[in-house]
Amino acid sequence: MIITIDGPAASGKSTAARLLARKLGASFLDTGAMYRAVTLAAMQAEVDMSDQDKLLGVMEKSEFQFSLRDGKMVVCINGIDVTEQIRQPQITANARYIASSPKAREKLVEMQRQFASGWQKIVTEGRDQGTVAFSDADIKFYLIADSLERARRRQAELRAKGGDQSLEQIQKAIEERDKSDENRTVGPLRPAEDAIVVDTTDLSIEEVVEKLLSCVKEKCLKKN
Ligand code: C5P
Image (tube, rainbow, N blue to C red; front, side):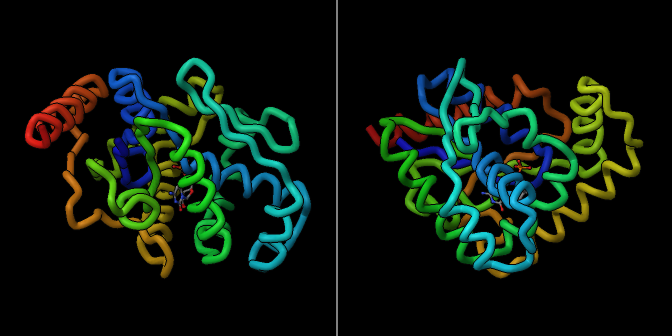
């Protein structure tokens, strides 16, 4: 069983996917972490991020490992745990280079399919999971939320880690990222035709998970 959750930054995908996976006894894949890991490796190698072949070279030379620990994704590059490091704002800002490289995306989608093939049930989240990586997924969700609400959520996360960016700065960065995700030619951010769209603006994370879970149950009942 493959469940995909796509949507813009800070729409609640990651947390919802992780909690839904836990409730279903399924595995969980945070594909944004993959884009972030390649971005970090490219930054560490100091390559020109706009050069696709250089990016591919970095991907080929580095060993990426994505695994689950206590239901959370742990990311290692060449055996070094970079799970926290890939969340830094410079990585968030530079991920667009990898995200808009057709060759890098192709490789990452391949890695995502490979990861999923190892599990009977998986909840995978990102931008193109229902449209490209798993276009034949059993259930597809697309989460949306107002950009101000998303900025509030991101600010709370950043504050917990000692960050002090203003709400306006965060909202602007989120809206810029939406634009770049929606307008790239490969794997753009958009709902799959058969996706269930859920607006999370006024919902708590528990309510989001309940809603997704009830859709999954309904779909499973219909299938049987
Ligand atoms: O979801 P997260 O914010 O961690 O993703 C980081 C970046 O990776 C996003 O801004 C997006 O551009 C890119 N991404 C993507 N396709 C995915 C997942 C993430 O292009 N499936």
